Length: 206
Image (cartoon, rainbow, N blue to C red; front, top):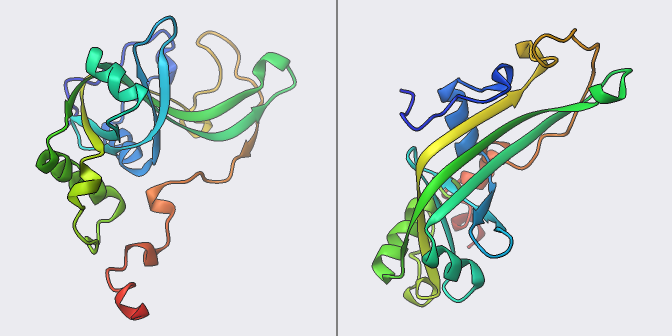
């Protein structure tokens, strides 16, 4: 079911991405987001591994850095996730472009320094990367260094440009005769081999 927070309004209506199951699959598969928090005079941006839960993004950071200080001062945070797909070329210079998927989420962060909560948060986030659940428990000493951050989504916009879907040129302009040069597939959870999720792999080494 499409969540209420999905906002499809944008100037380029031909690029709006409405397919929620595809958006959700994209967010569960991607590995890295950019997390943007308020700072002066410029926003502060950091790359983060993340886990998408359906209504929030789970991220974490050290308790002692700039990012943790800023997010505690102001809980508003933007999460951006994107994937380039192909380079597009046409005879006209202005028609050199990209195919891509892109999601921007505007969120309000809730942070926790409570060690049991941090451990629970990390276990929830690890489910994306270790669904085989073969890891030893997170140590309290490690959790004491971590700030757990749950970024609850208030609004989310999704955008894509994929030629197979007929998205060629801005509305009202002739379709450009693009040549398409796909990029190699980027890092993603689904790109890992099956052995990465084998719960017996460590046992066989002993």
